[in-house]
Length: 333
Image 1 (cartoon, helix red, strand yellow):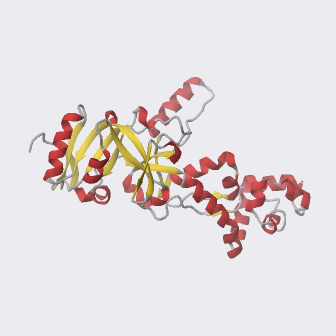
Image 2 (tube, rainbow, N blue to C red):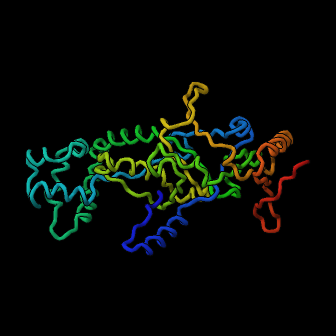
Image 3 (cartoon, rainbow, N blue to C red):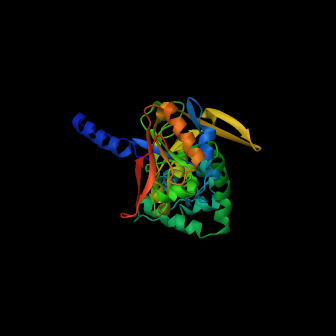
């Protein structure tokens, strides 16, 4: 997920660091790949209505998935602190002093291991936590049954958010194939600085355009982070803003909102769908697909007069360079 703006002790250094951070995290134009049918249905005189898609409706079968580990260094330190040192048994009084969310997460016999044979004086808390996590996860069925309620809680909370997915490029052949009807659709570019992408009803990074981070191995989450209400939204956003590296070609930028903050909701084919409306004034570019039908091309030419200063292009392929490029979209056929 997007990094936090850096802080510095000295004003000049802070300003320079902020400018650098802002350049890395600001997205100037984002692109939405759409079939012609979807674009024509979603576009009105004044706005373009895009679906706030629940994570479980996105096309990645491992969306919002990551490995869950039992223990963080901070939790290890907390248990040792409450016990009054290493090597102490986990008495009833110590168990009762643990925060309730942690007691719900951990069967008592697993938590007791923290102060038993796996606690060593020659290790840092993070090292002990990592080793203990491996041991607990090797228990197998007991570990799976212990974390299943947490997975269910996380899934229910993630389902309360919706995602509008964009890309940083209009030139991805795979994206045209997958999301724009094999080149028969359109790509709509939006000005990333438009006020529509700064929704004050949601806490950052919700309500902001945020780049997805691609990783060979997804970051692990620990149960104490999921249990802590103060850190839970950060955990959920991390889940929604990281994907495995083979999705990197999408160069995805996400706009995430609680579905309760949607601009519209409608029942379609028995399903309740949520939508985010973007003003047509936020549209900076429209790219017409290389295989668009004559009817859709004529519709686009009529639309061109309505959208004023919007830049119009058509996707072409250079047979010499063997790559796509943007050519002007002719006003008349």
